[in-house]
Length: 340
Image 1 (cartoon, one colour):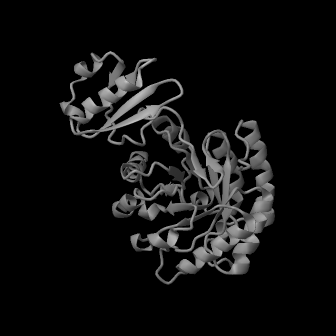
Image 2: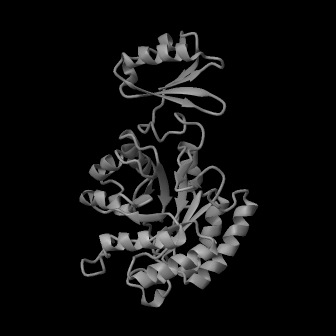
Image 3: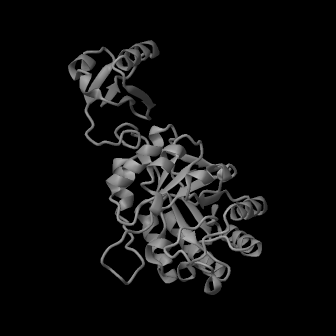
């Protein structure tokens, strides 16, 4: 249920209304939007009589919300959320580009790549320290040593770092990470999501291989219900019958998620297609449909990458793609985020 307040509602009146509502053992969330002030009710609202609420002097309108997700719902939060990351803003009218290798391999590899993507215009650095792999024999990542190398790269470039968490037991190792990524395999690891809900770090939540947008929204709700409102969606391709690409990139997810939710949306064209040559057109398409950020894999030597070399751009290729992304972003009215 959401309660839309009248213009001019006094703080004392709002406080009295909130206390009355909390007497029904439900959670209230006051949202001060640009055009409206709204009180969102979360919990069992069946015992709240809509007519009694509507009769309150400061209430303009009362609506019941059928969707099971509340915190992530645009009806509860009409204005777009902007997630701040070390001076950068995901959402709010600018575009961020998160770039770097699939896996952190060596100090030379991550430092060289980080410097290159920074020079080309990337605004954040990605890199996998812990790597979920389909095969148990494939490279699983450097673990905490990989995080330490990312931190070193951040010291040199100033780029905030984004890396993936795989296990609840690793959470303390991410204390110095700027954005914690939850990959598609953990999108419905609800124990992990609940714990991340107690974190104060931005969470990049990737859509599962066969997950609906409703399921993605509910996964975000798990995090937000714990108190962490800093959630960013990431569409990284879904599994379909088409074998020509690694996955099928669902660009319609961007406007659909923005219609149903106030949270920012990122597109990962690298994992979506699995083909380096498709990163440019898919990135431009993502910017055109309103994506708030891109996550692109870049490796200083893709042919010898320890994982996902086929979907990684070289630094030179990335620099050329960035020129076109910048032009598309300017044309779309969302320039690249230059930070503070």
